[in-house]
Length: 355
Image (tube, rainbow, N blue to C red; front, top):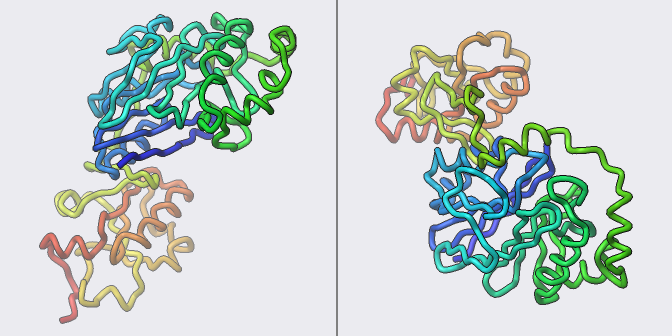
């Protein structure tokens, strides 16, 4: 089965793409700050990350390639023309990147930068174009070895030559548009489509008047290290107060065994209704009953300096409680995975059980 997901980083308007087949996955253009999210999705889908593929040396965000390699053992693949250090594979035009029973063809599409690559799925039904071709636009050509002439040639020979129905998935979109097609961009792209000539395109690109990306002085050096933090720079820290797992929905979770081991050091908040406190499932010893309907009004009853674990019957209402507490400024919050149902099924003790 082929799996495809389009993920989004709101800060940089970057799209990250997950493609998988037969349990093996690749990520195109991962973002450093979203590595937890991406790892959680891979875990929940039961996938092994084979490689991360960057379309170019980004100027507006730091790649998550190095961080994902540390966490998941994936290979880092970048263009051999990018000049980046620390990659496991330096890609050339015409290379193939296998994952499961599928593969991506590497096409060199320089012009935005020297090392720009596009990745075309076997069958030429999908193309991941980075900044070479955007939806009704393209990447700028005024820094980082940019060349309007080279970009024009890249798009026309390597991307507009694909089948008309081939879907275009760009590296960014600032309007929330998710995809286009070769046919659409050939006809409607105001910079490169229709009857626009090379001279028209060069003239257009010479007068964009855009400021440099705000993070360029940070992002480019980091991306030339494939996202590895500079020596002495702080890395993304994991919570130290308990062994937690991060979910694709954006919550930290703790399993019943870990809570049973550390419960005396934590605040356990049961958000069920009062009638459920002593029902057939009982409640966890030392837990505090704060029903969801009362949680917002009674949050001051909790110590903000101690981690909080939210509990309900199945983990659903307590997930909502975690979000509420996080918005209220609680820094260390986790959901009990599976709630009281899983707590009981794993044989942990309860109080107040009504037989």
